[in-house]
Image (cartoon, rainbow, N blue to C red; front, side, top):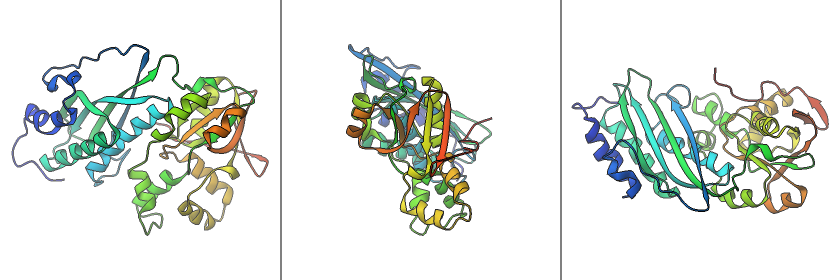
Length: 319
Protein backbone atom coordinates (compact mmCIF):
# COMPACT_ATOMS: atom_id res chain seq x y z
CA UNK A 1 0.00 0.00 0.00
CA UNK A 2 1.32 3.44 -0.88
CA UNK A 3 0.89 6.68 1.01
CA UNK A 4 -1.23 9.40 -0.55
CA UNK A 5 0.82 12.08 -2.32
CA UNK A 6 -1.28 14.72 -0.60
CA UNK A 7 -3.97 14.82 2.11
CA UNK A 8 -7.31 13.49 0.91
CA UNK A 9 -10.33 15.57 1.83
CA UNK A 10 -13.33 13.47 2.93
CA UNK A 11 -15.69 15.30 0.59
CA UNK A 12 -13.32 14.99 -2.34
CA UNK A 13 -13.22 11.25 -1.72
CA UNK A 14 -17.02 11.12 -1.70
CA UNK A 15 -17.30 13.13 -4.89
CA UNK A 16 -14.59 11.31 -6.83
CA UNK A 17 -14.79 7.75 -5.54
CA UNK A 18 -18.30 7.13 -4.29
CA UNK A 19 -20.78 9.44 -5.99
CA UNK A 20 -20.31 7.53 -9.29
CA UNK A 21 -21.34 4.35 -7.47
CA UNK A 22 -24.83 5.71 -6.84
CA UNK A 23 -25.66 5.37 -10.51
CA UNK A 24 -27.68 8.55 -10.17
CA UNK A 25 -30.18 6.88 -7.81
CA UNK A 26 -32.39 9.71 -6.51
CA UNK A 27 -32.57 8.07 -3.07
CA UNK A 28 -28.85 8.77 -2.59
CA UNK A 29 -29.33 12.56 -2.94
CA UNK A 30 -25.93 12.72 -4.73
CA UNK A 31 -24.35 11.86 -1.33
CA UNK A 32 -24.66 15.53 -0.41
CA UNK A 33 -26.72 14.81 2.70
CA UNK A 34 -25.95 12.70 5.76
CA UNK A 35 -28.81 10.29 5.05
CA UNK A 36 -30.68 8.69 2.18
CA UNK A 37 -34.43 8.83 1.60
CA UNK A 38 -35.88 5.38 0.88
CA UNK A 39 -39.40 5.29 -0.56
CA UNK A 40 -41.80 2.59 0.54
CA UNK A 41 -42.70 -0.14 -1.95
CA UNK A 42 -46.29 -1.34 -1.60
CA UNK A 43 -46.59 -5.10 -1.32
CA UNK A 44 -42.94 -5.65 -0.35
CA UNK A 45 -40.91 -5.99 2.84
CA UNK A 46 -37.56 -4.22 3.11
CA UNK A 47 -34.79 -6.69 4.04
CA UNK A 48 -31.60 -5.29 5.59
CA UNK A 49 -28.32 -7.13 6.19
CA UNK A 50 -24.88 -5.97 7.33
CA UNK A 51 -21.39 -7.46 7.21
CA UNK A 52 -17.97 -6.04 8.05
CA UNK A 53 -14.43 -7.03 7.10
CA UNK A 54 -11.24 -6.35 9.02
CA UNK A 55 -7.75 -6.71 7.59
CA UNK A 56 -5.99 -9.69 9.14
CA UNK A 57 -9.30 -11.27 10.18
CA UNK A 58 -11.48 -11.47 7.06
CA UNK A 59 -8.83 -10.85 4.42
CA UNK A 60 -5.07 -11.05 4.25
CA UNK A 61 -2.73 -8.07 4.36
CA UNK A 62 -1.74 -7.42 0.78
CA UNK A 63 -4.92 -8.82 -0.76
CA UNK A 64 -5.98 -6.71 -3.76
CA UNK A 65 -8.42 -4.14 -2.45
CA UNK A 66 -10.72 -4.36 -5.45
CA UNK A 67 -11.29 -8.02 -4.54
CA UNK A 68 -11.77 -7.13 -0.85
CA UNK A 69 -14.50 -4.66 -1.84
CA UNK A 70 -16.15 -7.14 -4.18
CA UNK A 71 -16.15 -9.85 -1.52
CA UNK A 72 -17.69 -7.44 0.99
CA UNK A 73 -20.58 -6.76 -1.37
CA UNK A 74 -20.93 -10.42 -2.32
CA UNK A 75 -21.17 -11.78 1.23
CA UNK A 76 -24.01 -9.34 1.86
CA UNK A 77 -25.68 -10.41 -1.38
CA UNK A 78 -25.42 -13.98 -0.14
CA UNK A 79 -27.42 -13.07 2.97
CA UNK A 80 -30.16 -11.57 0.83
CA UNK A 81 -30.20 -14.58 -1.48
CA UNK A 82 -30.74 -16.93 1.46
CA UNK A 83 -33.85 -14.94 2.40
CA UNK A 84 -35.19 -14.86 -1.15
CA UNK A 85 -34.73 -11.09 -1.41
CA UNK A 86 -33.80 -9.05 -4.48
CA UNK A 87 -30.92 -6.59 -4.02
CA UNK A 88 -31.62 -2.88 -3.99
CA UNK A 89 -28.86 -0.62 -2.68
CA UNK A 90 -26.22 -0.38 0.02
CA UNK A 91 -24.58 1.86 2.60
CA UNK A 92 -20.81 1.78 3.06
CA UNK A 93 -18.43 2.75 5.86
CA UNK A 94 -14.66 2.50 5.46
CA UNK A 95 -11.98 3.24 8.05
CA UNK A 96 -8.69 3.86 6.22
CA UNK A 97 -5.30 3.44 7.96
CA UNK A 98 -2.38 5.76 7.02
CA UNK A 99 -0.69 3.36 4.53
CA UNK A 100 -3.77 3.48 2.27
CA UNK A 101 -3.41 6.31 -0.20
CA UNK A 102 -5.45 7.32 -3.22
CA UNK A 103 -4.49 4.30 -5.38
CA UNK A 104 -5.74 1.88 -2.72
CA UNK A 105 -8.95 3.80 -2.21
CA UNK A 106 -9.50 3.99 -5.95
CA UNK A 107 -8.96 0.22 -6.27
CA UNK A 108 -11.53 -0.40 -3.53
CA UNK A 109 -14.06 1.86 -5.25
CA UNK A 110 -13.34 0.21 -8.61
CA UNK A 111 -14.17 -3.18 -7.11
CA UNK A 112 -17.47 -1.90 -5.80
CA UNK A 113 -18.22 -0.32 -9.16
CA UNK A 114 -17.58 -3.58 -11.03
CA UNK A 115 -19.80 -5.74 -8.82
CA UNK A 116 -22.37 -3.02 -8.20
CA UNK A 117 -22.96 -2.90 -11.94
CA UNK A 118 -22.79 -6.68 -12.33
CA UNK A 119 -25.32 -7.36 -9.56
CA UNK A 120 -27.51 -4.30 -9.84
CA UNK A 121 -26.75 -2.74 -6.44
CA UNK A 122 -26.15 1.01 -6.06
CA UNK A 123 -24.51 2.98 -3.28
CA UNK A 124 -27.05 5.01 -1.27
CA UNK A 125 -24.83 6.58 1.39
CA UNK A 126 -22.27 5.96 4.10
CA UNK A 127 -19.16 7.36 5.70
CA UNK A 128 -15.39 7.36 5.29
CA UNK A 129 -13.04 7.94 8.24
CA UNK A 130 -9.43 7.54 9.27
CA UNK A 131 -8.06 4.97 11.70
CA UNK A 132 -4.62 4.02 13.03
CA UNK A 133 -5.43 0.57 11.67
CA UNK A 134 -6.25 -2.02 10.53
CA UNK A 135 -8.31 -1.34 7.40
CA UNK A 136 -11.97 -1.94 8.25
CA UNK A 137 -15.02 -1.76 6.01
CA UNK A 138 -18.69 -2.31 6.71
CA UNK A 139 -21.52 -2.62 4.20
CA UNK A 140 -25.26 -2.55 4.87
CA UNK A 141 -27.30 -3.97 2.00
CA UNK A 142 -31.01 -3.42 1.42
CA UNK A 143 -33.28 -5.69 -0.58
CA UNK A 144 -36.96 -6.23 -1.37
CA UNK A 145 -39.01 -9.37 -0.91
CA UNK A 146 -42.76 -9.78 -1.51
CA UNK A 147 -44.59 -9.08 1.76
CA UNK A 148 -44.54 -12.07 4.09
CA UNK A 149 -42.39 -14.19 1.74
CA UNK A 150 -38.91 -13.82 3.26
CA UNK A 151 -37.29 -17.24 3.74
CA UNK A 152 -36.32 -17.38 7.40
CA UNK A 153 -34.26 -19.83 9.41
CA UNK A 154 -37.23 -20.72 11.58
CA UNK A 155 -39.43 -22.56 9.09
CA UNK A 156 -37.98 -26.09 9.03
CA UNK A 157 -40.27 -28.91 10.17
CA UNK A 158 -39.70 -32.62 10.90
CA UNK A 159 -39.95 -34.56 7.67
CA UNK A 160 -38.32 -31.81 5.59
CA UNK A 161 -35.24 -32.54 3.49
CA UNK A 162 -31.88 -30.86 4.22
CA UNK A 163 -29.99 -29.65 1.13
CA UNK A 164 -27.00 -27.57 0.08
CA UNK A 165 -26.51 -25.66 -3.17
CA UNK A 166 -22.89 -26.45 -4.06
CA UNK A 167 -19.36 -27.47 -3.04
CA UNK A 168 -18.42 -27.18 0.61
CA UNK A 169 -14.94 -26.61 2.00
CA UNK A 170 -13.45 -24.57 -0.85
CA UNK A 171 -13.50 -21.37 1.20
CA UNK A 172 -11.57 -22.97 4.07
CA UNK A 173 -9.09 -24.57 1.70
CA UNK A 174 -8.87 -21.33 -0.27
CA UNK A 175 -7.69 -19.37 2.75
CA UNK A 176 -4.95 -21.93 3.29
CA UNK A 177 -4.08 -21.82 -0.39
CA UNK A 178 -3.82 -18.02 -0.22
CA UNK A 179 -1.39 -18.46 2.67
CA UNK A 180 0.64 -21.00 0.70
CA UNK A 181 -0.29 -23.92 2.95
CA UNK A 182 -2.33 -25.86 0.34
CA UNK A 183 -1.27 -26.66 -3.22
CA UNK A 184 -3.38 -24.60 -5.63
CA UNK A 185 -1.69 -24.63 -9.06
CA UNK A 186 -4.52 -23.00 -11.00
CA UNK A 187 -5.57 -20.58 -8.25
CA UNK A 188 -9.07 -22.05 -8.05
CA UNK A 189 -9.17 -22.41 -4.27
CA UNK A 190 -7.71 -18.97 -3.48
CA UNK A 191 -10.21 -17.54 -5.94
CA UNK A 192 -13.11 -19.21 -4.17
CA UNK A 193 -11.94 -17.66 -0.88
CA UNK A 194 -11.25 -14.18 -2.20
CA UNK A 195 -14.23 -13.91 -4.55
CA UNK A 196 -17.22 -16.10 -3.63
CA UNK A 197 -20.27 -16.33 -5.88
CA UNK A 198 -23.53 -15.45 -4.08
CA UNK A 199 -26.34 -17.76 -5.17
CA UNK A 200 -28.62 -15.11 -6.59
CA UNK A 201 -29.84 -17.68 -9.10
CA UNK A 202 -31.75 -19.41 -6.29
CA UNK A 203 -33.71 -16.43 -4.99
CA UNK A 204 -37.04 -17.24 -6.65
CA UNK A 205 -36.77 -21.00 -6.11
CA UNK A 206 -36.02 -20.54 -2.42
CA UNK A 207 -39.03 -18.25 -2.00
CA UNK A 208 -41.25 -20.75 -3.77
CA UNK A 209 -39.97 -24.03 -2.31
CA UNK A 210 -37.76 -23.69 0.79
CA UNK A 211 -39.07 -23.84 4.34
CA UNK A 212 -35.86 -22.42 5.86
CA UNK A 213 -32.46 -21.29 4.57
CA UNK A 214 -29.11 -19.79 5.54
CA UNK A 215 -25.92 -19.04 3.66
CA UNK A 216 -22.82 -21.04 4.55
CA UNK A 217 -20.54 -18.39 5.99
CA UNK A 218 -19.58 -19.81 9.40
CA UNK A 219 -19.42 -23.46 8.28
CA UNK A 220 -21.96 -25.97 7.00
CA UNK A 221 -22.46 -27.65 10.37
CA UNK A 222 -22.74 -24.33 12.20
CA UNK A 223 -25.11 -22.74 9.70
CA UNK A 224 -27.30 -25.85 9.57
CA UNK A 225 -27.30 -25.57 13.34
CA UNK A 226 -28.63 -22.00 13.10
CA UNK A 227 -31.61 -23.37 11.18
CA UNK A 228 -32.13 -26.11 13.76
CA UNK A 229 -32.05 -23.59 16.63
CA UNK A 230 -34.36 -21.08 14.96
CA UNK A 231 -36.82 -23.81 13.92
CA UNK A 232 -36.76 -25.75 17.19
CA UNK A 233 -35.95 -29.01 15.39
CA UNK A 234 -33.14 -31.48 14.95
CA UNK A 235 -31.13 -32.03 11.77
CA UNK A 236 -29.32 -35.14 10.61
CA UNK A 237 -26.38 -34.23 8.35
CA UNK A 238 -24.53 -36.94 6.40
CA UNK A 239 -20.94 -35.89 5.73
CA UNK A 240 -20.50 -38.50 2.99
CA UNK A 241 -23.28 -36.80 0.98
CA UNK A 242 -21.64 -33.36 1.17
CA UNK A 243 -20.73 -32.10 -2.34
CA UNK A 244 -17.02 -31.40 -2.89
CA UNK A 245 -15.13 -29.77 -5.73
CA UNK A 246 -12.42 -31.62 -7.64
CA UNK A 247 -9.80 -29.56 -5.77
CA UNK A 248 -11.29 -30.51 -2.40
CA UNK A 249 -11.51 -34.18 -3.41
CA UNK A 250 -7.84 -34.13 -4.42
CA UNK A 251 -6.90 -32.60 -1.07
CA UNK A 252 -9.09 -35.10 0.79
CA UNK A 253 -7.43 -38.05 -0.94
CA UNK A 254 -4.08 -37.01 0.55
CA UNK A 255 -5.30 -36.71 4.15
CA UNK A 256 -4.41 -39.50 6.61
CA UNK A 257 -7.58 -39.01 8.67
CA UNK A 258 -10.60 -38.84 6.33
CA UNK A 259 -13.07 -38.20 9.14
CA UNK A 260 -11.13 -35.25 10.52
CA UNK A 261 -10.60 -33.86 7.03
CA UNK A 262 -14.32 -34.01 6.21
CA UNK A 263 -15.14 -32.42 9.54
CA UNK A 264 -12.77 -29.54 8.75
CA UNK A 265 -14.31 -28.99 5.32
CA UNK A 266 -17.80 -28.96 6.86
CA UNK A 267 -16.74 -26.50 9.57
CA UNK A 268 -14.46 -24.08 7.72
CA UNK A 269 -16.98 -21.59 6.34
CA UNK A 270 -16.56 -18.89 3.67
CA UNK A 271 -18.32 -21.03 1.05
CA UNK A 272 -21.41 -18.80 0.61
CA UNK A 273 -23.49 -21.65 -0.73
CA UNK A 274 -27.05 -22.00 0.57
CA UNK A 275 -28.08 -24.65 3.10
CA UNK A 276 -31.84 -25.03 3.20
CA UNK A 277 -34.76 -27.27 4.04
CA UNK A 278 -37.93 -28.05 2.09
CA UNK A 279 -40.81 -30.52 2.22
CA UNK A 280 -40.06 -33.70 0.21
CA UNK A 281 -42.48 -32.73 -2.55
CA UNK A 282 -40.68 -29.37 -3.00
CA UNK A 283 -37.11 -30.60 -2.63
CA UNK A 284 -36.98 -32.06 -6.14
CA UNK A 285 -37.97 -28.71 -7.66
CA UNK A 286 -35.00 -27.03 -5.98
CA UNK A 287 -32.62 -29.54 -7.55
CA UNK A 288 -29.97 -29.21 -4.83
CA UNK A 289 -27.78 -31.86 -3.21
CA UNK A 290 -29.61 -33.72 -0.44
CA UNK A 291 -27.38 -34.03 2.62
CA UNK A 292 -29.82 -34.94 5.38
CA UNK A 293 -33.22 -34.60 6.93
CA UNK A 294 -35.12 -32.66 9.56
CA UNK A 295 -36.23 -34.62 12.62
CA UNK A 296 -37.88 -33.96 15.95
CA UNK A 297 -35.37 -32.87 18.59
CA UNK A 298 -32.71 -30.21 18.67
CA UNK A 299 -29.27 -29.50 17.26
CA UNK A 300 -27.34 -31.16 14.44
CA UNK A 301 -26.50 -34.85 14.46
CA UNK A 302 -23.59 -35.50 12.11
CA UNK A 303 -23.13 -38.93 10.55
CA UNK A 304 -20.51 -40.54 8.35
CA UNK A 305 -21.48 -43.72 6.50
CA UNK A 306 -24.41 -44.09 8.88
CA UNK A 307 -22.41 -43.80 12.12
CA UNK A 308 -22.93 -40.84 14.41
CA UNK A 309 -19.75 -38.77 14.90
CA UNK A 310 -18.58 -35.85 17.00
CA UNK A 311 -19.16 -32.72 14.87
CA UNK A 312 -16.31 -30.82 16.55
CA UNK A 313 -16.60 -27.02 16.80
CA UNK A 314 -18.88 -26.96 13.75
CA UNK A 315 -17.78 -23.57 12.46
CA UNK A 316 -16.24 -20.16 13.01
CA UNK A 317 -17.17 -18.05 16.02
CA UNK A 318 -15.96 -14.52 16.70
CA UNK A 319 -14.91 -13.91 20.29
